[in-house]
Image (cartoon, rainbow, N blue to C red; front, top):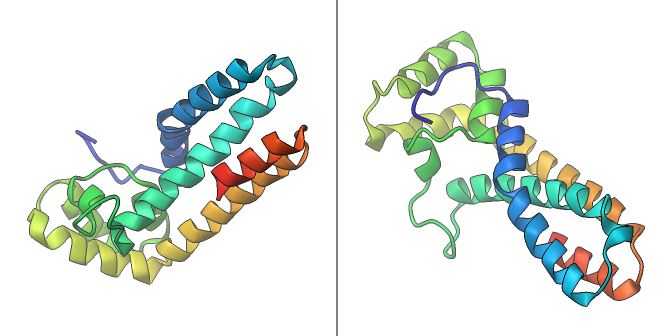
Length: 166
């Protein structure tokens, strides 16, 4: 975040999300399951499930930053204005035209006033189909988490996992 560049790739952003958000879900789920009893049969499922859950959650958080969320952020584009390395930015960098990359580079070098960043980024994100791509990645994370939940017994635990995904 302190040294943003045009080299941020979607896989990099997803890795950040995996390391940032997923461990919190993993710790909470593991602790709850451990309190309920032995967890050996879930040792492989928990980190994988939480990875998909955390990544999907973080992408949704990014989307809510642009679409609005009364429970989350009050100003649209806060993450972008703060030059945080988001998946949305990475997707834009990947799909941007040369002129859009020049605009993105100006933003990343802090040459564009913060008050103007959100408008420019929204225009680029919409042009590059970033929001639709992010929505598809949320669905992919959801589907992967649900496929792991499908294999879990007992049924009340499977229902809990589905509740978390929803």
